Image (cartoon, rainbow, N blue to C red; front, side, top):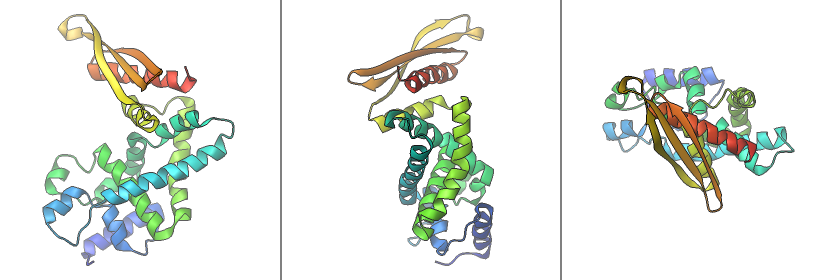
Length: 241
C-alpha cells in the first residue's frame, strides 16, 4: 500500500510515542483507520479497524487476566472478572489513548472529525484495542504486554483506592455482559422539588435467574442519578452481596 509522506511521518510519530517499531506499516495504518474514512474514500484497498479491534479486545483481556491471576492468587474468578471489567472499560482505554494523543493519528471522514470523532470515547477505546491487536499480529505477545500493563497498573491502584470508577454505568454494563446477565434496567422512582431545583431518584436492576441486585441513586439530573445508582450496585457486587 502506498502512503503519503505526511502519513508516513504520522505513523512514525505514534510508534515513537509508544516505543514501537512495526514491520508492517499497513497493519498499523489499518488499526488507526475508522470505518467512516473507508466509506468516504471508496477505496477498495483500504481496510478499517473493526476486525483488529475485535482481536485486540481478546488480547487485552488475556493479558489483563494473566496479570490479575498473578497479582491476586487468593481472589476468585468472580472478583477478578469485576476488577478486569473496571480496568478495561472504555473510559480507561480512552483516557490512555488521550494521553498518547491517539485521536490526532486516526483517519476518519471529514464529518466524523467535525462532529468530535477524534475525541469520542468509543473511537479512542476502539482504536487502542485495534492497535493492540495489530501489534500482536506484527510483533507477538511479548511486545503487547508492556503497553497494556503500562496503563493497567495505575488503573488497578485507582481501583483499589476507590477512585477509578467514574463512568459507573459503562463499567456496570460491561460487567453484566461478561456475566451473561440481562442489561441494567433504569427507571425513575421519584421526583422531588420545583422544576429549577428538581431531584431525581432512579433505581437500577441487574442479574439473571436467582442472582438479582437492585439499588437506587439520587441526583439533580437523571444522568447523575443513574451514575450514582450504578455506583451503589457496583459496590454491592464488589462486596459479593
